[in-house]
Length: 144
Image (spheres, rainbow, N blue to C red):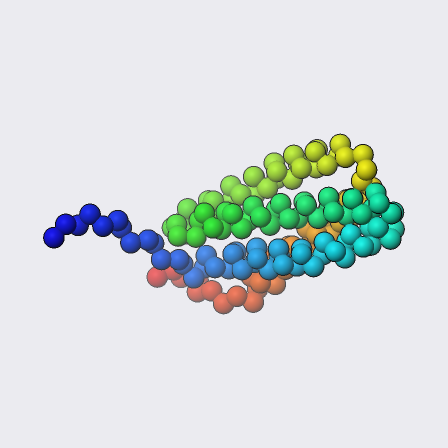
């Protein structure tokens, strides 16, 4: 019998689900923040506030999307490779956020105060949601 079958995919580890759930929950919370921030920005500063709020929500959105991409790439890898990939994703996030803020700074129609406040609130919301998900997830301490 020929044995030209590809190797079976590595099973997903139980601990690898936690960051994926946290990233998805953070993105869900961000989807709730976008219309609220846009409304508040518009009420406070008019059109520039609306534009600033929408651009401000792109910062935490970018961070959460990079987290989700790193989790998807590392899901079936060894625990060491997964941890390394998540660490590298922090550097990618830092560079991406700086690049995004440089690009957003050039937008003339956005209120900078609303943009900054929205970005900070969005990042804090994302971190809080991820922390709650991680704290409530039961994960074994030892990988079999």
